[in-house]
Amino acid sequence: MEEKMNRCFAVIMAGGSGTRFWPESRKKNPKQLLNLFGGSKPLITQTLERLDGVVKQDDAIIVTGRIIRDGIRRALPGVPAGNILLEPVARNTAPCIGWAAVHVLKKDPGGVMAVLPADHHIADVGAFKKVVNTAIEAAGSGSIITVGINPSRPDTGYGYLRLGSEKSAGVREVEAFVEKPDASTAQKYLDAGNYAWNSGMFFFTAEKILAEIKTHMPDLHSGLMDIGAVAGTDEEAAVVEKVFPTLPEESIDYGIMEKASGICAVTGEFGWSDVGSWEAAWELAEKDEKGNSIQGECIVAGSTGCMLRSSSGKTVALVGLDDVVVVETGDALLVCRRTRSQDVKKIVNELKAQDRKELL
Image 1: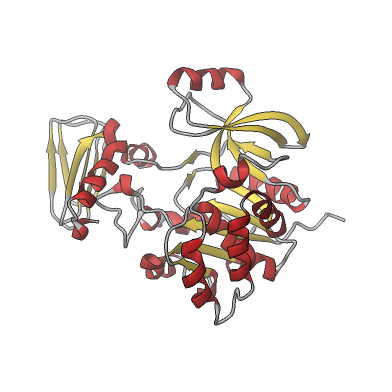
Image 2: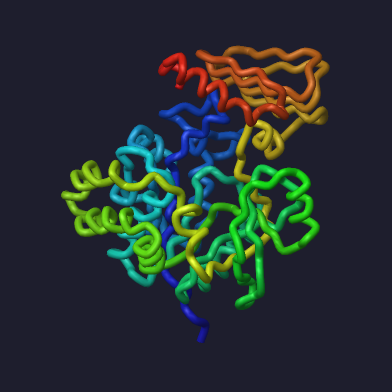
């Protein structure tokens, strides 16, 4: 008889602000709620839908900020309201995941948590599900599993996993988490053949991750136990309001993954992108014969390799420019070289410095 797969809970981390996608991405409508590829659904909707058949919507837990609660509910109408955990303040991914873990612990201590960012793109859902099922099975036996992406180029924008020996079919030991490299180091990683991009996806049981938090982040564990004592009750909101802002602001990578032993990885190739900039969105979007991606009221003449978006109804016209991004939202207009789109966050920083809240 075929062994039954562990019950799986999708924990979707949806608290990011997506500053590189200004001016469309704002505090009340950040990247994970955007339709970035013309005709597609918001990124967070896609994230949950590609787990169809693996995770029931009743078993999806969304951790996000209060300011986008309504947007999350519109994007994920099938997720119970009680499964949307609203952080009073941002505290990075370790407290986010820990809060979800105390909820999963009450629902099913043996259930596996599939922890996923809300704002990634995956082209080959079938290949992705195969990786997910392998990861769930391995995590169900007590391991911490991360997902590695087989690198297709010497990319300097991602952290890497240095992989060791195979522990079981499709599961390899993670020898080290490696910071984003420079170009020459990234090429060495690619040539070595035992490095993978760190996707930021993790699989483990609630019991396992809470035990690791207790060992490596005892202050966080103490606060989570206070929340866990009332998780799912009418008292939880008040306790979260008091306790959550006191939790250490730390990522799961630094706080746990780089310290815990026995972490393993399942690697794959499924058309993954963390969609980190307008250039990444351009790469994924449909384009015309001249490489232009156009959404909204836009006209292009004598231009190639451009991304144009107009969401206010205003007509945007571009003549004789190549490889630029133009994004118009009614109250703001962004124009930048496509290859400099990572620097859009500098505009957001300047707006913060000028206290231009109406544009944030």
